Every structure is written in C-alpha cells, then in structure tokens.
Amino acid sequence: MGGSLRIGVVAGELSGDQLGAALMERIRKLNPGARFVGIAGPRMRAAGCEVLAEAEELAVMGVAEALRQLPRLLRLRRRVVRYFCAQPPQLFIGIDAPDFNLGLEKCLKRNGITTLHWVSPSVWAWRRYRLKKIRNSTDCLLTLFPFEASFYHEHHVEARFVGHPMADEIAGSIAAPLAREQLGLVADRPCLAILPGSRKSEIERLLPVFLQAAVLCKRVLPMLQLVLPVASPRLQSLCSHWLERPEHATLDVRVTEGRARDAMAAADAVLLASGTATLECLLLERPMIVAYRLHPLSYALVRYLLRVPYVSLPNNLLNR
Image 1: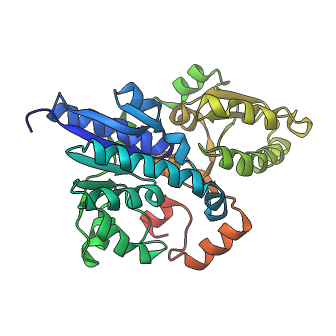
Image 2 (image 1 turned 90 degrees about the horizontal axis):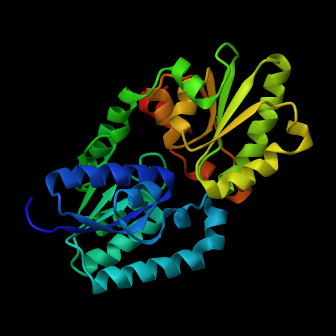
Image 3 (image 1 turned 180 degrees about the vertical axis):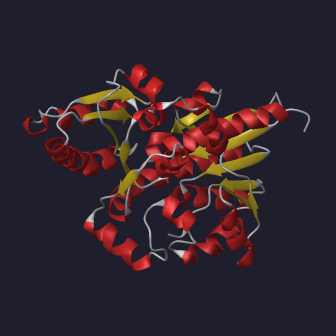
C-alpha cells in the first residue's frame, strides 16, 4: 500500500472513537503517510485525525430521543456529505453509528467513493429490514464477531470478519490489586464499579437508578466502596449533580476521568449499561449486572422489534 492515502472517517461515541484510533494506528503501519479526516473523538484526535465535528454529537440514545435531535443530525450529515463530495477521499470508513453513517455512506457511494462500514448494526438482533440499506450503502461491511459475517453472507451482503481490537488490548490490563492502588481504593474492602454509559442521556436515565441500587447494596455491605469512571470531562458536572444529592450521602464513591477498564479491573462486581463495555467486562472476567433504561416509546419499539432473548452482548455471544 504505497503513496499518500486520504481516508474519510466518522466515528460515533466513545466506543467508536476507541475503535477508530486503533484502526488508524494499524493503517499507518501499512501506510505511514495515511491521513484521516472526519468526525472523531479525543483518541482519534490524539492519533492525528483532522476533525470536522466531535463524535459526541452523534451520541443519541433511543428512538424518541433521536427524533428530537433529527434536524441537527441531518444538517450535520449534509455538511459532511458536501465536504467529502467536494474533497473526495480514496476511502471512507463509517465506524458504528449506523443510523447516521449508513445514510452518509449511501450518498458517498453514489458519488463514486469506496465505502466501508465497521461494526455491524445489530440486524441479527432487531430491525432486519436494514439489510437492504446496508447492501446499498457499503462496498464491504467489517464485523467484530465471526457469526456476524456468516449472517451477512447468508443475506448476500459483502462482509469480512476482522476481529475486535479489545481482545488484544485486554491482555495488557493491570491486575486488581494494582488497579485499586492506582485508583486510590482500599485494598481489603468490597468494591462495585458503576458504568452508566458515555452519553449525557444515559447518565440522566441510568446514574440515578444505579446510585439507588448502590445505596441498597451499602445497607447490606457497609464497607462497600464504589468507583465511577466518567467518560468525558463534559459529563463531570452532571455526575456530580447526582452524587451530591442527600440520598446518596452515605456512598463512598471514587470518581475518575476515563479509566473505565481500570475501574472494572479493580472491582469485585460491575453494574453497567448495555453496550460495548459488557464485552470489556467479559474479557476482564468480572461478574456484571447489565441494565438499560429507555424512553417508554423507545422501549415499546425495541421490545416489539427485538429478535434475541438478551440485552447483553456476552449473553448473545454465548447464547445463554
């Protein structure tokens, strides 16, 4: 792979930003001169991606919530389409965020730009009608899990299983005693990690319930300590708002900026939002309770369309 390579990329949310940074690093090993431009988060920015907009702008949870943000998201997508059509990259890679990226990829593909989509939408779980849109939007779909590639081949969609970078990264994770020491946690007290998600809407919906659960746990385990990794500085004040409420005064909470993996490694158990973090927790071999809370309209739609019995990715991988 020689010569200068310019790649357009759009990553949604924290997990997409992490995947994007790992992908950029791998591509640069093959082509040191590769340049990247698009929608990115802090890790991709640190890796040298030229930023058109922040990945957090795509962090919208639920159908009802997305409808309120739809005009803004459509304006953003039109701006990105205009940019890439005016300055076409040799390749465009959409990372996750399928509701935003698939429409973007379809427009770019129509304009002769080769498109890849990395991270399969969960069409094997729900909304299988999106298969046609995926087929029309991407030249190839890159999947994290082997069963996904097999599913797409059965439905005549070009797909390649490429694996999950986390499987390699997790081997270098620190042991529980060291993680506790580095996070300022007491070594011989039980510890619960709380991960309510990386979106503002997730914090608002999940953190109050998670803290209520922690209060109940504290009554049974008076020595319980908690660690709460906050995904970004922008969410710090929102988390503080809930932590400072009188009903949570009995909780002993260590708040960290980022460091979610260290928090999970340090914990005896993890209470977390359904999402990519559940896979990370599985690989760290920590027991977990997975929860999610949606707008009632979003919940009704998801419940009607869901094709798998579990909300947790590890359970769906294990099929039990």
